[in-house]
Length: 297
Picture 1 (tube, rainbow, N blue to C red):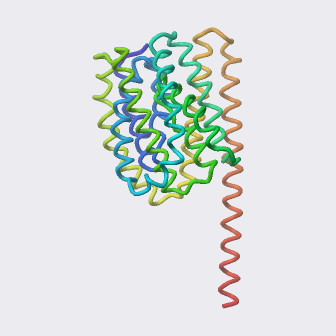
Picture 2 (cartoon, rainbow, N blue to C red):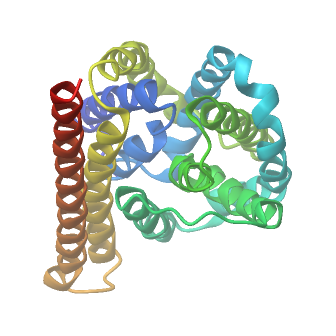
Picture 3 (cartoon, rainbow, N blue to C red):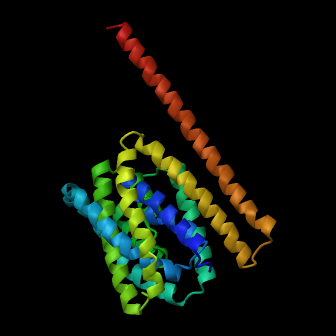
């Protein structure tokens, strides 16, 4: 791994961008930071540093959205129950699985979730309680191995039509629970190291600058548009990381591996084009309706 100055500078820059996204949307820090940072650092080195950052960030977000917690608790608790076995499994995988294969699994799991978000996928689940516990197990496993849980949780809560307040409340409850459980599991397994904790020197300042920046930006940009653009950026990065890891593990030749990346870019560009096409049509219809209302006032 390239534990070099360029790698640390990239870590600072991507953490700044990711913190801004988190400040705007309430999630997205790890799902943007990790795919880029994994090009320089292993999961085993990166995750213990990020989980401490996320514990602080998620606790602050929950505090800011404390008024919506009581209404969101019922939706979040079945997922929280599933987190416990998932975090135990994920922490064990982090401590024992080969870093290269763990990186491959991280990219391969993330890419479909990110593309589904970019597509605006919605298919409400009637038996939410039956799905929530298995989802919690999967999210706990994913989070403990990668510190990423935003894409599947956001997909679930957006899919169920939660409004902004309940979305942030339910997301905050689950994320605080998973960070607390994972931080404790890492300590029990002895995964914290001086090399891992030194990464905090670069991540903490980026987070402190990025969170208020994101809260400022979202006041001037439509939230859904901002989210779609962020997911597109994430899809490109994850696709590149997946291709690079496939090459490193010698699973495919370079030209074949990068075909995966090109396919992800092509699909994402199509989804982004379709989104902006629909947005333009809706804006035109809203303007026409407004002109008609004024003309017939």
